[in-house]
Amino acid sequence: MTANRGVTKQAGVLLLALAIFAAGGCRKTIDTLTFSEPEEPTRLIDKYAVPPAQNATAEPPPDFPRKGLLGQRMKYGVMSCPVMEERLNAILDRIEAVWPGEPHPATAFIIPTRGFQAYSTEDGGIFLSYSMLRDITSENEAAAVLAHEYSHVVLGHHKLSHAEILFRAVYNFGSMYVSAKYNLKKGDVKGLLAEAGANELLLEAGQSALLPIFSRDQEGDADLLGTDLMVAAGYDPRGMSGFLQLLEASEKQEPSPEAKAAGLTDIQGKPGKQQPKSLSEGLDAAVSEVGSQLASAYRQMSRKHGSTQERDAAVHAYVETFYEDVNRDVDNAEAWTALLRSPEVTREFALVDEVKTAVEIKQDDEGKAMKIIAGLKDPSGYAAVPYCRYTVLGLKSIQMKGDVFMASLRRSAAAPDSLLGEHTRLIAVLEEKSPSDALQAAMQADEEFGHPLDLLPTLIRLNKKSKNDVMVAGYLVKCLSAGDKDLVRECHAAAGKKQ
Amino acid sequence: MKKLIRACLCGAALLSAAYVLAGDAFAQQYRVTSYRYERIGIFSQEEKGFARVAKVPRAELPPVPAAVTKVSPRGYVAVQGSDGVLWFEETQVVIEPPLRKVTGGCDRTVISRTSQAGVFGERGAGENDCE
Image (cartoon, rainbow over all chains, first blue to last red; front, side, top):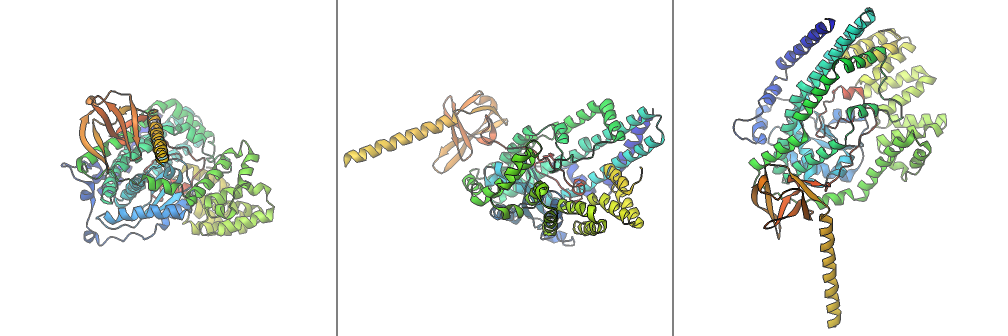
């Protein structure tokens, strides 16, 4: 009974969130997405392009994606491979030039990430994993992925992410509500856990069944508009199919969600996510008992409806409709292969490969990992790649003297392309010696990275050590408003409070 | 002199034959295992490249699996049809083993909570949720 009431409540909140979303600033996006199928065959480039003059009052997009790049510095940073970057941005320039709507500058970056990954940011940052660039076999396919990402940018698809944040917040506040109730009424464990399980399932429903339908439409639109743009820029439309088919092959190699969760460790080899405490364990058990089958059904539905195979079929049909007679034999495979085999690209990609291999084998064979690191031929080469600089310093730290290590930490944190991880590592080392120095470093990092959520527990802990109770309270409020239950738990722990 | 020319010609012929045979041997390890779409384009190999000559319903195409007889680096594969060689676009057929392989894999690395929360509004073509 308790569980049913909980489901109803949570469902009500979820529907309310949907209503707010539909009535809010994203309404136009929803209309566009819901009725994206045109009555008559129309190219998306004709449908979506708004002549610049009609949109003159809108704030012009930034020339350079500083915000997107800052976001990437909170992960692995970007690689430095000018030859490849120049080629990618030359392709992107051709694509930008044929977009008939409001001009939106974009810049492509290479990220030191394995797997078939690409993403864009609202401010025109397009980030492509080096291993995907290596798997791509022609400039046509590179143009396809760039045109796809650029389409997300010009179509304003990133605005929907705010709705996802809203859903996540609704879910997390629901979880916190259950958490608080659990602490108050320890007798009704089973009912409360069932309620908590229902909350998890509602998140699953919200994320896997409802939102991805919009996202899938967006993906479809980006595929088709991307096809328009790449063809207009003079590329072979087969590039989009080729890219999607490589993506399909990549997806077949992906590990299961369970394996992914188990594999989430940080580059020091420690567990990346905090292990569940008693309530979370209870939540997991409840999800397992109450609704794993339902959750699985949601996952299957979302995948079935949005498969890469279907995206490829849609692109094929689109090309057959609008571009049947376009030149389908734009041969740039050899040029792309030559680029991949160029000394600079080979060296840069191999460097990241070696560092990643060292990280992977460190737990099983530390000696071998250190040998790889010691064998890096060009010391200045890895220092220029933030991910490598951070990782190599982490691996070498045990062999370094304290003052040398500290100097290296300070140097890496002072670099203009420093990663958030480099700052948090410096803060952690400083905290052992001088909490006030650590607090100063934390506040600098907080400012530099635009007040990232990750730093909140550290700021709370360091302010508490410095007896700045007002600051502790302020950061705690900020932490609560972020609506992330794990973060809230960490913030409370940092403040020495019970939830 | 004539002997030398003859020897050169013979050598060139032998090399060409070896090249063709090696190319065929490379192609013949592959099979077209299915057709991706309802109608598949048939192409002819011409001097300047490939040109589409017809679009044929799947049911009228050679039964699969069909041995690949030639592979063009321009993105086309040939199979033997009842009336001769049929060239297909590589993207319109499923080939086993795959002609192009992906390295795949996932990074065992955590990402920042701020960027996970979507503050920077990510949306990926790959949608690879390794992270």
